[in-house]
Length: 436
Image 1: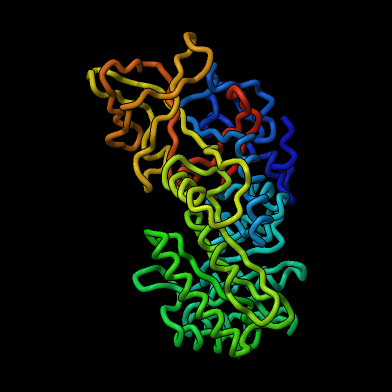
Image 2: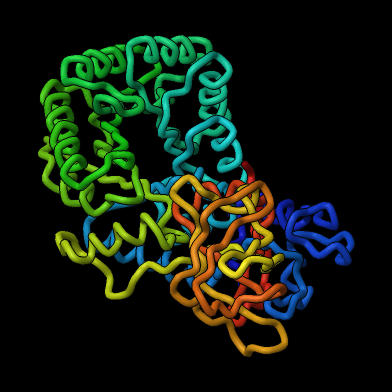
């Protein structure tokens, strides 16, 4: 299978040469030492039992379909995307997204910025305000080292602006290399961001007045709000702040103003509201969803169904599809109503709820995986085991293989530094390296 669209834009040979072996989670102990780039040449197949379980696998065709879906969604709604790199921390996926037209890669920390830069991202949006001298200086150092690199940071307090201004003074940037800053708007009880118009204007004025900084736009993160009503209300507040700042002439005038919001659950509401914000000049509307690339079977799938039912934005004619799975074995079945499977919290994310069993397969007895019958559900998890409740007549037996889907794939990616890429029939076609 051709994986050239997953090749990193820079330092791909270095990544392909990464050494794996019997100490690498997910690699067969008998494989010996091998390079990441040669994993797809080993002839492994998950269903044939060639891999130790649990194993985390990524369906290549589904990821490509999801990438195509987002590209079509953006075109239909006059948007660009700076996907959250922190979702996957997989430079091969960054490159797939950039090749599909992503405007930038979004990160949250200087470590994530360094990973994205090393593997070829030429424009980065840090959706966070860097705090402390080390983080601030690292941002200016990246900007100073490469005249072609673009970096956008957040500011959400006067103290934070002063940290950035002090960093600009230490860096001694040329006048045309001022760092681009986005004003962050928040909501009461949320995370970061200015809570009211007066504070937002004060912070915006401080950015606009500081040598070495320039106010490039206004940012928010709506993804933790519980309902569409709450999201809509907050986006109205955000729109009011953006229009008030534009009216004061504080935004840079030599480039389009950036309006950006960031979650994977409500990007349809964001698209709808960003389109109506009135600004005096050109605008670049940026969403930052990251989880679309693998989707899920829980919260994001629920919101996707809501989005389709609402029909308030342009949508492609095909759907997002869950592309990430963790496979495991039924290890023990001493109780009629419960089995123990050999997968735990160290293997799959649980922050959005217990993972859901989706497929099962009996090696040597079935030609292909089948849907898990209704009534099977996890009731608890330990570090290496999970407790699977069984309905009467459950066919599962010791040695059967079970696939689990999850919600919020971010916290499954971070359990694996090596994720196996599979094609149809679960042939292993490559490996994905993460950098958490």
